[in-house]
Image 1: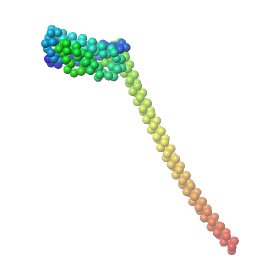
Image 2: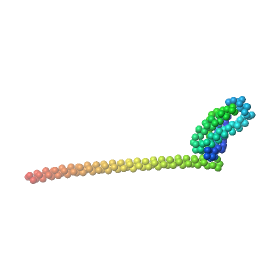
Image 3: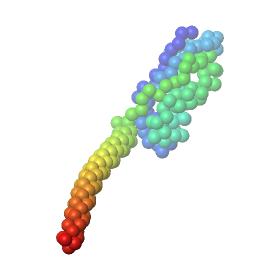
Image 4: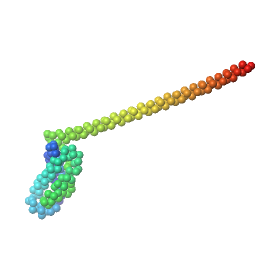
Length: 192
């Protein structure tokens, strides 16, 4: 009646498109009704052999209805589906799952490179996004620097222009005062 584990290691399966892959599934069970279990099998090894076939059937059935991308990205949901699939059949053996089965690993078979290609594609996509983001950030930084330099240069030009205008206004005022003084002196000379 203790908990016991059942591992499907290097189990070959196929997705809905018949893409081959190997997986590792771990499941934990316990015998909840020893009388039913004893009536169905003569030994614990025989029970494990029968459970192995039940689990393989459930795994094969569920995975064959999904594509490899879904299987790889939603591994957590498959453990629950495997467990639900075997739960009813396990009752007839006097066995119950202790917790959800776990899809531990998915890898290519010897002749297949599909999973490696998917991982390479994902990796290159991440690299492309990263490089694009870095380039975009550099572009924004350079644009900001150019804008800042332009603003500083415009401010300097405006300040210089303002200074020049002030100098011109001062010269004009001085010129007007000088002209006014000369006019006054000229008028005074004419009167005299």
